Each structure stands twice: as structure tokens, then as C-alpha cells.
Length: 68
Image (cartoon, rainbow, N blue to C red; front, side, top):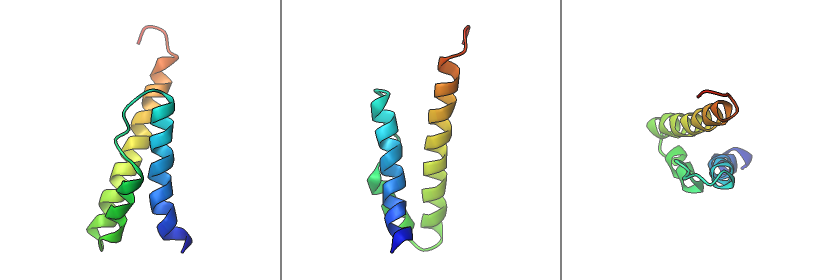
């Protein structure tokens, strides 16, 4: 039971990170529904969650660099 719950919690945590920065999140806890679809759903879930994390940390990295 732990793995299916994680598929909803992880996007929810990412959403909270975006909200704490005052930005609109590209994912929400409901993104976990993608994981329930066989095969393609797992891929879509992974791509959406990973892209959201990459974009978040890329934006955070450029905030502290002068001239960008």
C-alpha cells in the first residue's frame, strides 16, 4: 500500500513547494491518478513529476546568480 500512496503524496509535496514560492504548480496530488493507468500512465506520471521538479530547481538555481 505504500507505493500507490506515494504516487499521490509526491506531486502534492511538489505543489506545496511551488505554492511556498508563490508560483503556480504544474502538478497536484491528483497527478497520481495517472499512475493508475497501466503502462502509459506510469510513464506520464514520471515525466510530469520529474519535469516539475527539474523546472522548480532550475528556477531556484538561477534566482541566486547575478546577471541572469
